[in-house]
Amino acid sequence: MADEEISFPVINLEECKGCQRCIVGCPQNAILLSDEMNNAGYQYAYYSGYGCTGCKDCYFTCPEPLALEVHQFKKVVDDKVGKMIKAKVANKGGK
Picture 1 (cartoon, rainbow, N blue to C red):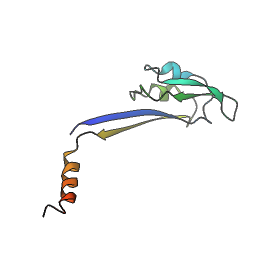
Picture 2: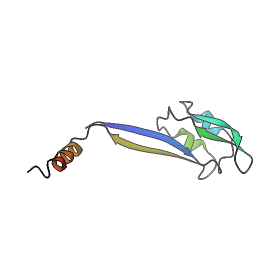
Picture 3: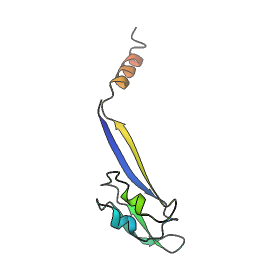
Picture 4: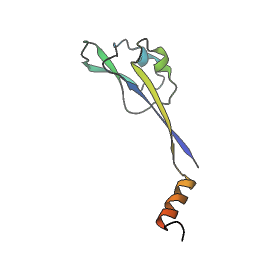
């Protein structure tokens, strides 16, 4: 069984004050500054969609509570148990 880790920052556009600390702190340059403004009148940061390694540097540099989270999960690439269950279901319990 092989796992593939998937990580990405989730930025609350309305909480972001556009200080750019997450942008400067990201070693992968995966966070950019929007040309648009949020309801408070700040340009906000956003995830470019690729490049995040899950290092959480953006999270730790963000001074605004609840503005940024880093989500990480493991995706099972080759799951033997899952294949076994699918085979049993296809064979109606192996009978």
